[in-house]
Amino acid sequence: MITAAELKGKYLNFFEQHGHKIIPSASLIPENDPTVLFTTAGMHPLVPYLLGESHPQGRRICSVQKCIRTGDIDDVGDAWHLTFFEMLGNWSLGDYFKQEAISMSFEFLTVILKIPSERISVTCFAGDSTAPLDIEAAQIWEKLGMPKSRIHFLPKKDNWWGPAGQTGPCGPDTEMFYHTKQIEERSTEEFLKLSDHGPFCEIWNDVLMQYNKNKDGGYEDLKQKNVDTGMGVERAVAALNNFDSVYECDTISPILDKVISLSAKGTSRDNRNARIITDHLRAAVMILCDEKGVVPSNVDQGYVLRRLIRRSIRHARLLSINGKFCKEVAMVVVSAMGNSYSEVRKNAQRAFEELEGEEEKFSAALENGTRHLDRMLKAQEESNQKSLDAKSAFDLFQSYGFPLEITAEMCKERGFSVDVDGFNNLMKIHQEISRKGAEQKFKGGLADHGEKTTMLHTATHLLNEALRQVVDLSIHQMGSNITSERLRFDFNYDKKLTDEQILLVEKWVNDAIDAQADVSFETMSLEEAKKLGAQGVFEERYEEKVKVYTIAKGSKIFSREICGGPHVKNTRELVHFKITKQESVAAGVRRIKAIVGVV
Image (cartoon, rainbow, N blue to C red; front, side):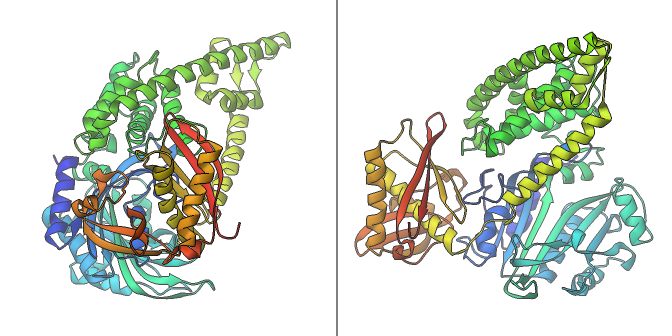
C-alpha cells in the first residue's frame, strides 16, 4: 500500500532530481484574485509567472498544493469527488515543453510508481477550426511505446485549458488514465463509455500552454510556452491501491471511521451521508486552520465555510448523530493533516471553537425550523390535506437550512407526504440562478493583470505601510482582494479607525504617490529579506528565494515587501488614493476598501 505521504515524497523527489525547485503550498485563500473564492489548483498561485513574471526559484518548480473546489459539491458523497484535496504539480515557466513534460510524466508513472505501461491510456486534443490537432503530443506518446489504440483524441471540452479570462495563455492538454481493471478498450467511444463508469481513472493532466488567445478570438503562438501539470493525491492513492473510493485513502479513512463510530445506525463505509460529513468537515477544518483566518459568515469564503459546516450537521441528523460532534471529527482531521501542514496544528483550537459556535447557531435554526414546520402541518391538517407542498418545503430549505430528507422524514412521522418532484424543480431553478450569478461574478477567470488591477495591487503595498506608520506598527496584512474597480485589504486591528486616522492614512499614501517614487524588485533569500525589514504575508509558506519589491524616492523608502507582482513602475501612475469604506471582518480583523486614479 502506498500512502499519501509516500506518493508526495516520491513526486517531489523525482522532480527535484529533474532540476525543479520545491515550493510550499500557498494559502487556500487566493492572493489579490477576485475571480475565485478559493485556490482551486496548483497553478492558481502561479498565474503571474505563467503570464511572464520571473519566479524567484527559477523556471522549473514543483509543489503539493492545498485546494478547495465547490463546483461539484452536489457530487460529493460518491466514490471520487472531494471538496478539499491535495494537488501535485510541476511547472515549466518557459523552459522545457511537450517532449520533456510527457516523458517525465510517463517515467514517473511507470518507473517510480511502477504502473505497468499496458494499464495506461492517454488523451490528446482532437483539433478544431481554431487550433490544430495536437499530433506532436500523440507522436511523443507513440515514441514512448504507447499503442495507437490507447491514444484517444478528444475535443476542446475534454483536452484544452484556458484562457483564464477572455484572452491570454491557453493550449491543449494530454491526460493520463489508469486502468483500475484489466480492460483493453477498442475504440475512443468504448474508452469514453468505460471511463464514465470507473475502470479508467484520470490520474494526471499535462497542460501545454502554447497559444495566446487575442481580443479577436484568434490564437497565436506564445513567446513563453509553459507546462502546467496536475495530479490529485487522493485519487492517485486510491487508484494505485485499487481502492473503490478516495475515502479509503489514509488521510481520509480515519475521519470516515470516526463519523461512522458516532452514528447509531450501523453506517456502512459507502453511506453517502457519512461521506459528506467526512468531506465537508475535513474541508472546513482546512479552511479554518488556514493562516488567512476565514471564519463562518454570510459572504464569500465565510459563506462557503458555513454551508460546509451546516451541511455536515444536517447529514449527521440523518445518521442519528445528535448533539455536538464536529470537534470530535475535527480532532481526527487535525491528526490526519497536521503532519503535512503545520498551520493545521497551530490553529486547531481556533477551528474547534468556530465549529462549536456554528453548531450552536445552527441548532437554534433547526429548532426554529421545526416549530415553523409544525405550524404548516397543523394548517394542512385543518384543511384535510396530508401533503406538504413544494413551496413550503423549499421555504424550509432556504430559511432554516432544512434538506428535503429531513423535511420528508419529519413529515412522514406525522403521516404527511412531500411534493418531492416540485421541490426538485424549485431547487433546479434556484441552482441555475445561483450558477448564473457566480458566472457573472467570476466571469473574468483567473487573476486579472490589467492596468487598473496592477495600480491597485501596488497601492496595497503603500496602504499596508501607511497603516503601520499611522495606526500601529504591529499591523500586518491578513488578506487582500482586487478587482478592476477597487482594492480590499484585511489587516489585524481590534478597533474601528477614527476619521482622523483614515485621513492620515490617505495622506501618507498620497504623499508617496506625489513623490513619484520608483517601484523595483530584487530576488534574494528570505533571511536577507527579513534583514532588510521587508514586510511579508504568512512567511511559513515562502520559498528559499523571494522577490522583494521596494517603493522608494532616492533614500526615502515608502515600502519594502515580499511579493510576486504585478506592479507599476512609478507611483505617479496611481494618480490619487481614496479610502471608500472600512468594516469589521472578524474578531480582531478590519477591512478597508479603496480606489486609485482620478477620484
